[in-house]
Image 1: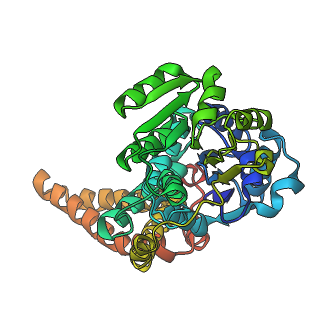
Image 2: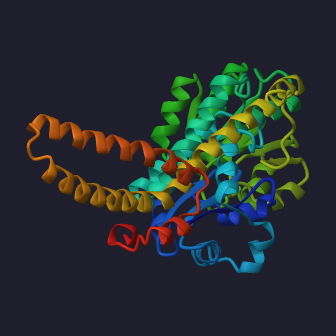
Length: 419
């Protein structure tokens, strides 16, 4: 029997930010996590974004898979099972494929139809392949998920005017201040989300853009492209004192802005309020800072909604995208079911071929007077008859046949099937 496929994880739908950040993984940490995961399952891929951490695994059975992945989560992330179990969902077989395909199509995102998730699904597969954690099932599952995501965006309007978390963060800044041109906006991160947010801010008219990053050179390169200025992390206190809005999106596991740092910045601001937009997971800003007078702290779970008209246009495409997902799930399941059938087809074909060769040899001994080309035609004829008879039955077997019944009926106990 083919091994079991399952998806286990949590997302913004199932878990609050405080729980999600316990299972968050940066790109630097993924290879080590994947190597560890291989001890708990046959194949594995980890999809970790700002809104989800999901583990796609192949195991001998669903029971073993669930137990193995749960054990991996507890040990690798050092969390007690009771801490995260209430928030973790599990999907198996076709439901696991459907969940991943919906994710890749942008249907499960915080921002419906967002574009970044498709690239993140591709990256998850690539990283798992590099770590030698994948096999033929996870490879097929993820390549088909990417195909489903591409179809969704090419054949429907789900990706039209596509937004991202960075877009939503900038929209929050615009709701707070309206015109961003006079605002001093500090972006802490020159990573993917930080770069995107900084670019959107520049496009929205921000002329006082400041970029800070762990590596100053990356901050300087980004700032130069956007006519902003860069600051080194040691200079953050002064930049905090000057900024109207701070947008932060690093992949640090420690607070970039501690309670004490924000408190100190307030004393140098002359009573001006400080708006902090934290879209990092784990969070960059100590949540206790929200209690400080004059601080307005937003995180990824409480950002405002996107433009309603934009959202409604994409919502109208959901049914069409779901139809694409359903079709791709059926394609995957057809391939997956065939994995059970391939060995028995090979064994049955070998058994039939053995009988054909025996009967052909017996017949040709009686027809030795025939020319070699005539004997070859008889050989080809018998092969053609066999193929036509078997083809229809093989197709049925692939779609819905009983593998064990066929194996027992034809006594297929040979090594080809056992392999």
